[in-house]
Each structure stands twice: as structure tokens, then as C-alpha cells.
Amino acid sequence: MGSKAGQYLKFLLGPVFFVWMVHSGKLNLHQVAGGLSHWQAISAMVVLLCIQPGVTAWRWNLLLKAQEIRLPYRQAFGLTMIGLFFNVVIPGAVGGDLMKGYYITRATEGRRSSAATSILMDRVLGILGLLLLAVAMIVPNFGELAKNPATRRLGVLVVGGLIVGLVLVFSAGLMGSRVSEWSVLPGVVRNMLRSLPGYHQKAAVIPLAIAVSVFSHLLSCIAYYIALRSVGGAADVPAGYFFLLVPLGLVATAIPISPAGIGVGQVAFFALFHIVSGSHAVAAADAFTVYQLAVILVSLGGFCWYLPYTDVEVRTRVPSAS
Image 1 (spheres, rainbow, N blue to C red):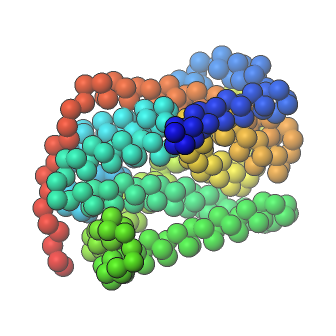
Image 2 (image 1 turned 60 degrees about the vertical axis):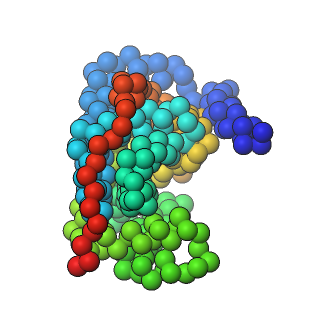
Image 3 (image 1 turned 180 degrees about the vertical axis):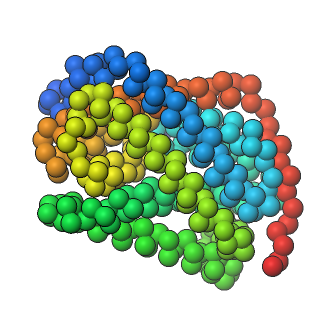
């Protein structure tokens, strides 16, 4: 009962946040409608967001192959689309990972921990790619960002988060087997830790997967920029601010509070862009709503893969001991 109440609460919080944003004037539905009326902009966003699942499916396939799990790209793409669909209908951006995990682990008898680890790594490397994209723009624009104490602190936080994340990922690959022997850890965690050295043995996989993540998130940022232009709010946003605040806003939408980040994303983008100016804040929330509707439109297309889906066909073998 408590779990069900929590789920219902999550479904209610998003609309509550959304209504509060509109009622308080922090979200201008007239501007959102104006942005949606630009069909050329919406079409460009949909094209970019349709390319993105193909890119993320490739990243996940790389991580599966590192675990000696051979999944046809067509099926990896199908599961990715199913994951996008469930990101919309389940609170947060992790519901799709749960569905992908269900299908891939069911098809990998004896290698379920390795399959589950690939999804965890896919999520982690996706976030690291987002942080790396932000850092790549922060460094050349740090002088400008440093003028504002809030953006200076956020910039340092992003750079620190990227460094800590990279250290943890590579340390886990090096020490996963040793840590998995700790009896205090749950069995599931120990099994997943045993799978991590597979990525260390194939040294090129992690950097390549992060590079793919950067490209994937660059598509998201371009799509959001188009949305920002469609509501008339992109004219004077410096690149340094844009690539610092947008990745942080996208990370916030992954918090499992509401389906597709509805309400949460508007609050996050308003708060982040308010650091620059109040006018930027309202435009940022408006633009995220336009962007979000495009994301939902593309994600709902995953139902076309989910409806006829049966089982995953994979080929697995025990990784070499090299």
C-alpha cells in the first residue's frame, strides 16, 4: 500500500509542479503555444530526437559486446525505443532501464549479472558524457562564468563530478573482482562487480562509449536550443552558460519524481537559468516544455516496438581471462 501511494504521489507531483509554474507566471503557456506553432522547428527537433535512440542503442551494444553478449543492433534499437516509451509512462528517466533490464536478463540465462551491469554502465556513462560535454564548453568560457559566483560554483561542481565519476568508473573496472569478495555486500552487487573487469579488459570501450554519449547529448542540446529559439529566448544566452545549465537541467529530469520529468524539468530549467536573469528563466521553462513535448512524441513511438515484442535473441560466451 505504501509503495502504491508513493507511485500515485509521483504521478501527482509533476502536474502540481506544472500548474504551480503556470499560476506563478514562471511558465508562459502562450509562449509555449507560439513555439509549437513553428512546425519547421518542431520537425527539426523530432528528427534530432529520432536519431538519438539509434546512437544510444549503439552505445549499449558496445557495452554488451564487452561482456561477450551479442545482441543484434535491430533488437538493441527496439529495446531502446521500448525504454523511451516506459520513460514516459513511469516516473523518472529510469523506468525504461528497468524494462530493458527485464528483457535482456530474461534472455541471458547464466549471464544475467553481466547483462544488468551493461545497463547500469550505460546509464553511468551517459551521465559522464553529459558532464564531459558541459566541461568541454566550461573550460574555454570559464572567465565569463567566473563573473557570476553561482555559475562559478556550478562549473566547479560539474568539473569535480566528471573527475570523480571517471575515477570511480575506472577504479571499479580495476578493483571490481577484488571488491566482489567482500561478504558484507549483497549477492546481486557482488555478481555485478565481478562483471566490471570485462570493461577494463577492453580498454577502448569506456572512452568510446563516453564519446558516443557526448554526441547523443549534443543532439539533445541542439534540440533544446531550437526550442529556445522557437519561444524567442536564445538571442543573448552565452554558449558557456547554455552548455553549463542545459546538461544540469537534463540530469534533473532523470530524478524519478514524475513521468517524462513533467513539472520537474520546468522547475529545474527555470531555477538554473534564473541564475543568469529572470527573463532567461521564463524562456528556459517555456523552451523545455516545447522540447519535452517533442521528446514525448518520439518516445511514444516506442509503443510500436513494445506491442509486438516477444523475446530477445542473444548469443553469449564466457569472457576470456586476458
